[in-house]
Length: 452
Image (tube, rainbow, N blue to C red; front, top):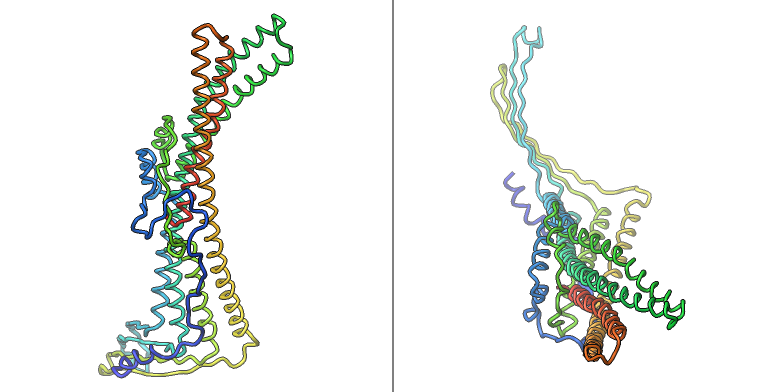
């Protein structure tokens, strides 16, 4: 028995059939092409991982904190990590002898054979069995399990990153809708007054009936949009509640209080594309899946080779008619496939195909990741330009409104000119609200693409 244990380290270092995993080389650009609107930093240490804190919005911080602690998709991803670790433990156990213990007792009276005497029989034993991993099939399974654990951990990170981006996006949309609701009420009031003036002019013959109808239609359309916006506000609040895993009305009550859209202070991106790609969890998932499938190809190949197994038993036996004695046995066996009509080769071909699929999935994921970052950089830059242009339009229209109000106060222009100028301000403010929320959403998408 002692010699058997001495053999364990030697047998565990036997050969492993199948391909050894080598991480594929990838070609990445030296720098980002679409980085004009963002600051670049040299390393991950210079990037704020909790980038949403830069908005300085306590409500948003609370929502993200709740989402990261209570979201059920995140908890499912975490449970999958524990599942993979359990399967890894099970796979590793196959590398070592399996030892069981057994004990039994019996009481019988065979009759004349023992002169009608009762016999008590007691037995206790330890049983060891071991399938020696001569060709590495079980060790390849452990390699696959290790890679699967890392893949699940990367998936968990991906869920977390996506969750933060979704909360920020939905929160920005909620604040936009709440601001739009108030703005639409003001627009409706201005259009009501314009409609009244238009109707008065029509009644005095200064305008045609078609112009009066157009003014009323514009007013009625704006009023009709008010409940639509209110409905969208409610739906967005409950979407955020789901993201935070809330099971009561606490989040709903918190979000019903209107507030401004978070202000984007600055956007940063890591200068070296290779550094960003190393942070992206989707690439890590694809790479670890490739490693797992490479190891599983080795598992399939190992089925072609002989399997060596050892077994032993040691114990004690005692009875009322025989003295106590030791019992033991030791045995070995070897088995090798002889005729399986292509089953093993078919499994090898399938495993090799899955490895090829995983390889191309990894390469495609890297290519898509580079395009994703470039696209998100471009989106953010264009949204930033749009927001700045609309802010200038809001300011110029506001100046025109101020001038119209001043002329009205001096009796130099009728009220309808003031209302018309005010209506233009509201219209451009509506576009500015959308652009501001789009800028926040674009920043969230950029940070998600950067693996933050």
